[in-house]
Image (tube, rainbow, N blue to C red; front, top):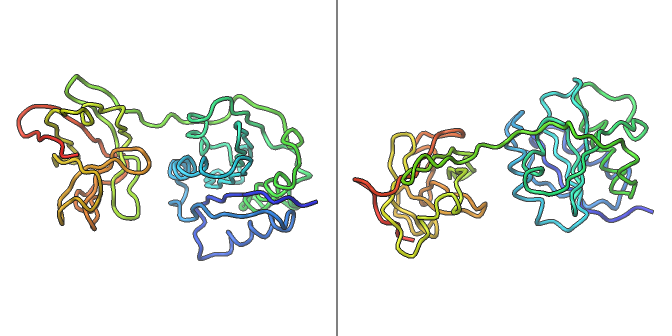
Length: 276
């Protein structure tokens, strides 16, 4: 009998073509009771890290036993492997290109399997659309209750990348990088409150955040606390320090994209006391 089971979808396919509709059709043809949820189909083309970031920000808010399909696959048609991974509560289906790296980092005891049971695939398999012919049918059968061990054997040599880590240069300087610019132009860094605890003390020291030769000296609790065109910092919902401006794009104002260096300096001339 078909089972009701949540399936999330993350791709770089966009919505102007037929790609998303087809993978949904394949899943629903196998399990009409699957509950499909679009996470993000506007991941930048071929951007594995952006897809990984989307997934890690969302997956844990879904019910246990949710299946997460993520297909950003610049290696489609090559020898890269299709894989499925299982944590304590969630299952992930993806190409073995590092797109699950942030899941591996956050979750303990993730079991990864190489999907080799091609009788679950559509036939013939296109060299250019594995999302339709391999990943979607695997998700469909998983959602219907087929056990993970039916799809292939466990592997340990799966691909993973280490995300950029903040670096404490000295007692007065911590360096990080920007991870993402969101739709509103907020610059999301890889710095968390744990990396710069001085900012959140009862009596924080003067500070300045340096990015693209600009200095930000204000930390707010909410976006609306900033004055028009004022650039300030905030701890966003992802748990990272963000650089933003009220009802504007900090990324455009600072001419900053992903990968830019960010420094947080404490004390010294020009530093200011946090307002949050």
